[in-house]
Image 1 (cartoon, rainbow over the protein chains, first blue to last red):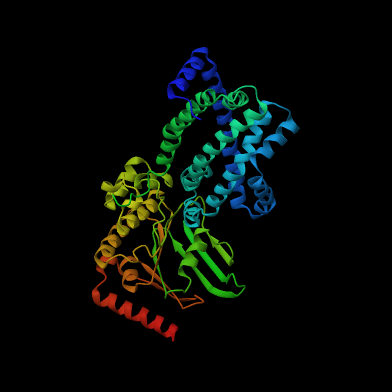
Image 2 (image 1 turned 90 degrees about the vertical axis):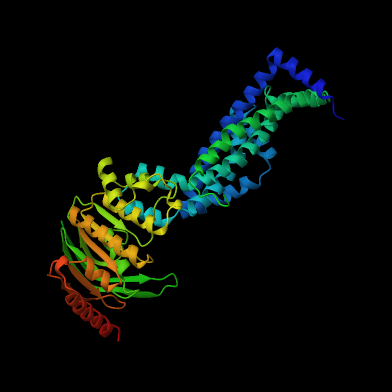
Length: 222
Length: 236
């Protein structure tokens, strides 16, 4: 069932020496970063617009609900059929999978914006840029951080499926090759370093950002 | 700077579709450096009047003239500080004051030691002082105070009244101070406006001619009796 750890380590070593491991990890990471950034930016913009404007909410809500419930696989296959087996199709499919999730989370954040602080900013005639930065953004930050954390895990899983189905590089593609050969050692040799990389991103990027945006909250039980 | 307020009527439309008149025939003006207390029972429209003057509520019949350029400093009933910014950052955000000015205001309100604290770490009294400091930091031409000392203990409220008065006299802002405490109104204002129970109408516009320091206890007591009896007559 499972290969010996040393066997996996030796394949990891061989792939690393040939440069294939770093190349595939890098290309997958780049796809994750691109799809994640697009989904966060576009999803946040859409979510805030839906939370602040009822007409936009009514117009976009059905589409967001459909996208939320559409299996990731369907979107990936449709993107490859419509846009061809291209990089754009892969990233668009992953972005569309994550985008509704971000939009729904940020919509809640925009709905929960504190009216009394908005009034304070108006009375004191705060310029728009300063208001967005100091009044609005900090209120949306916890929602953005929540969307970010759930988003990263979702995006890297879907990127691997998109690579398996329609790309000729990346960790997902290599896992597909291992599957065709029924080679569990090779599968783990690509999967484990990638999971490790994602844990590093989580610990050194996502969590510090989360801590920073919630620095002002009083600590309870200290 | 002269504020001119002339409100024919302010009607509140509730979510259930009912309408209620909150203010009726309220007209007055306020000169630079004048401290005016606005007195009235709870629910008579004092806060609504302040919201109209500050520009937060534009759904009323009448007009409010504030000659520009004007800067408004407002102290709300709740401190309304940004919880994710320190006290110093809260003061800077709304202000055009220099660092020295901010330090001076913070020192006058005894906030200097708390400038690096977040609002969540402050007591209510300190948070209210920070809100007052923020209003002064904009160097206001018009200062609007909505019961800034409510729910503070008597000793702290008295001390904060003195601090506020010193700052207002120094900066010469036209000041409208909403309160339902007659003693507070007499101790702080050169002029007292009295609103009737809802719908709020102007019952009295009383100038206190005697300088604040020379106001004897007997005079203050007579003034208080007169205002209280006026309010009691209006309530009955």
